[in-house]
Image (cartoon, rainbow, N blue to C red; front, top):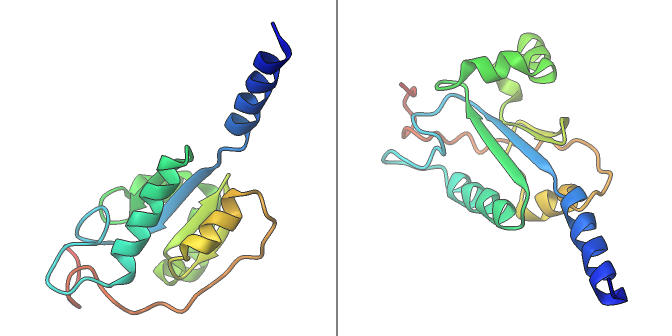
Length: 140
């Protein structure tokens, strides 16, 4: 191969190894994104858009809803431990490459960008907006 082809192959391999796995463990919501119902928490549509953006960047994104996928919360040891000790108050939990990086709130795109760029950052616990995907009522 010529030198240019070798450099391109190296760049492609570097990009693949830098892709992150992001997992979101949400509180119980009436739908997978929480952007349904009469009174949507304004943070939820933005966060859903941010996750779509991460996917478009090549990252692997999974989102789990406690009401719809409770087994996922038990299968992950860190998530299960936090739920056992703190209850659902620790949700939402955001994991990047199996490390909890955020809890109790949805991070900004800026924080997601920093975490997926490989920066070593402390866990953040933003204040919850207290909003609900179901207009203040309990989710079904």
